[in-house]
Length: 251
Image 1: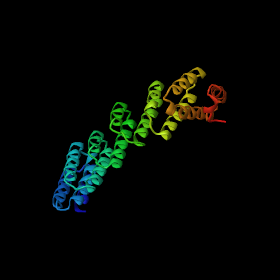
Image 2 (image 1 turned 30 degrees about the vertical axis):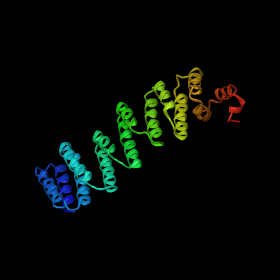
Image 3 (image 1 turned 120 degrees about the vertical axis):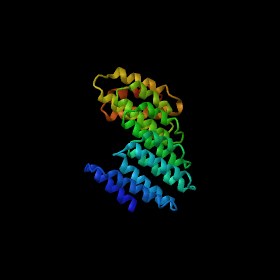
Image 4 (image 1 turned 60 degrees about the vertical axis):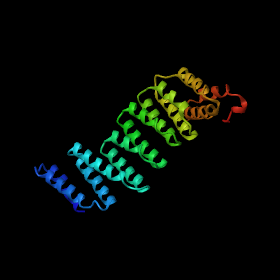
């Protein structure tokens, strides 16, 4: 409590442009040093102090978070993963995304690791950094996280008008649910793009029909349902005639 109180005082002193705010943060860190015999309490304090410090002195905040990471590394499992995930969340919160990515890879628990990587990936997507988002998705091999990650990236490509790139991602989906959501997003994009016509729909239809047989029917179904919802009844009805009767899952 003493450490957090000093840190909050330092934060508000800085907001008020008081020159001695650094002294308050120094007192906070000294208070934390006095609780080294209780690692969980110490790490919690470091995380909170680092968060308050991040908007004032990012370099100092980064050092505080590194101290937290060092302490977490000495913890036994499953406590280590619990606190490592908390650290990742704090780093994302203060926009230290690259460090958050690095520490996410250290998580041993599959669920926590994938949840953390999704958090990092979404942060990159939100800031428009698709290059790094694509880099993160390579470390997500489990479902449904991988398909969820691809869906987030696909939506951003559609937002940019990069239809070809978005379509190229469809074959990488392994989750039927997220594949369906992705295809519906493509259908909505096509309808909202006023400069597109049935020729473009046809091109997309052919692309989806060319996917592996394991997914093509579900993909086509989601695509046509999405277009039907958007009011493209004529194109949908004509497309259904080209699907073999045994594959006509829409009545």
